[in-house]
Length: 312
Image (cartoon, rainbow, N blue to C red; front, side, top):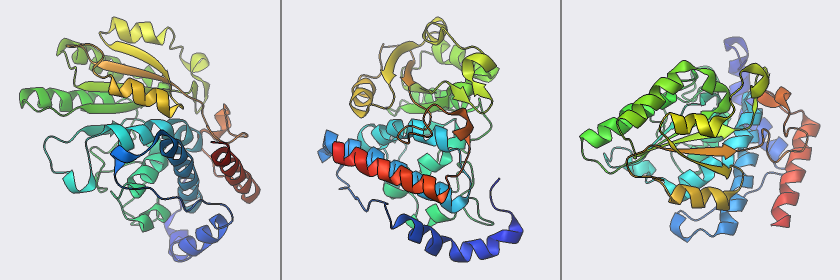
């Protein structure tokens, strides 16, 4: 749970000071040029590490967060926002901007990290997630610039993205619609209704992405509700599908640059990821679907991030 009203008054006063003091021991001050086209592949990899650090900072400030699923999708968000999406804070009213819908809305902290660094939301907001009267809730809302649709009720994001893609076709717009889904929400029937519509209307301006980390809150996806053969299922519903290592920025960049995969068909990127990616004690652990690291765990994570950066 996020902080309740009775505790928020004091927490909001001390949050910034407390979190800054905890992170000054290891949080990188790495910043990047706004010229995304000049960003090197090396910088892109370093940026993923920075986003993981910032995501932990946000979760620690909120004292809550869907940590494992945040960390599994950060590389996807990094590549989208820094290399692929035609979108910027000063162009959110541009009718030709690309649209991004995060159907797995519980991974809000990862999205907030990207939106903060990209300038869509003030940096101070990242320390106020879930606080009483804060504009930044535990799931994305349209109160934040850069959030196209409030999400969190699983299974609905793809239907919204399909509607946006249909509107683009009707209006003769050239924008694309990207939708990130968690694999746990694929048990929702609305996902497959939306998939049929996407194929029926030949939405080659739609790119669906599955964060395939194979774990959900109650355990393995294959134990809760078997999804395999997942690639073949989406192909049977009319998608052109490509699989990719969802934690490899080079591989992600190549696959996103190739969309649409087939003219007249919606594209689906099946991104095989690791839940809790980047932190040894969190990786592939269902218990980290939701959780806040202790002080010792936090410092260990920051040390691991530092070692990963030095090894690049």
